[in-house]
Length: 593
Image 1 (cartoon, rainbow, N blue to C red):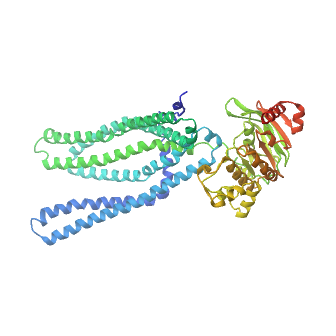
Image 2 (cartoon, rainbow, N blue to C red; image 1 turned 120 degrees about the vertical axis):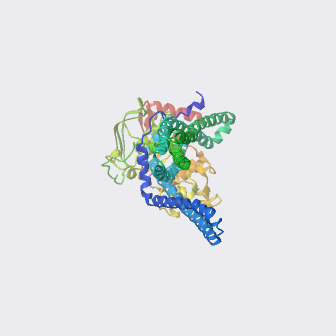
């Protein structure tokens, strides 16, 4: 399969827009309604002030200049400058208010979106490219904020403007005003016909941008792998293909968007022509003055201007509704692993872990674990070994309740972990993964992540225990050394030692080491062993390791295969059985020899 085809569209595009999204968006606007009302008032005052300027100019041209009344002329010029300055002041203050409102709305939506992402289960991140998630938090929120602030104010302003124009137009002449109004149904039919195509087109742009962003983010993270396998040319072709699709979708969407303004303008021209025809031919000469026709034509021109502005605003709404759908879709993503309504707080953990007929699958009808049962005593160290994909990491993930199980129960000290709060459970567990993640910041900050109120002495003590202190002190600024994103300046082994220190600092009751020493050289691992023994002391621990020499001293070893525990016992007991563990261990020792 071509690599290009792995970036699928997000959803079926033909679903009708759910107007519930706009009602939900209003919750972000309500708290700023007073500021928006003030901005609306300032906009109206600015518009009214600007309307006096043509009247002042008319007075100067028709009265002051012909009569050579310099005093009046200076007064009118002063009023003209004052009106202009006042209008600019109103608009400037209004702009500042709306910038603040817009940024506050961005902050509120992004805060809710990020908070929800923190709660989503591992499965959500397993199923989606991270770039697609990122574009929703950053780009899409930016796009909809203006729609929810300035867009709404412009709708109110232009609607008020339209109402006043209609009132003045009907005061001049009812029949000709009705001619103007005949263009409105034509416009509505036109907009309704184009709306659905436009929304689908912009949804498609949203998806193409999401695909492009996901691929770009993936390639930035995997730049080293790209160069190692000389994939630059092929990746360039894929990127160009995704970029072309993005460009094509954009051009298609713009084609529909660009039909709105010419459509309204064309209707306006035909209506104004109809005014002259109806006024001069149908109503007959003498029944309506030329001045009336010119006045109605002028009002008609003004009448279509707010409609055109409303059309542009509507255009912007359509463009951004696709983004709004994606944002709320993410916020609506169910938190499948969450606290039960009656969840209690997990008491201080002693360390007894029990699996009772546990079954689990990542995908439907593909069980990874089937009716797994075992009990681990407090303080006992248990190693999980077996072939790749057998379910070793799955077992330790379920202990921490990163996924929900389909059948059975998992108990810690007799408490069903599905009935206690996640925070009280996970705060008492320490998990070391094979891929040790390092955040941007100092080394000390990364270690303190395990215990935010830890002192510098506690951090140094934990680092010394796991043999991290020695290499940290050789860094340019010691514990204050800044590490880049994902710890790019550190070796994989150094990252793991920092993660060990972070985990030890958190003082967990249950410890999980998932291939935690895979990137550490044998010499460092031997020096680390004393620190590991200190970490394991008095704690229930689960250790996953392919290097079997590191788990020989564990209290129990479980061989995981075929969805369950095939063999279980100490190293000596399993070697006596001469089963699968024996074969795995002897073959590994032969390879080392």
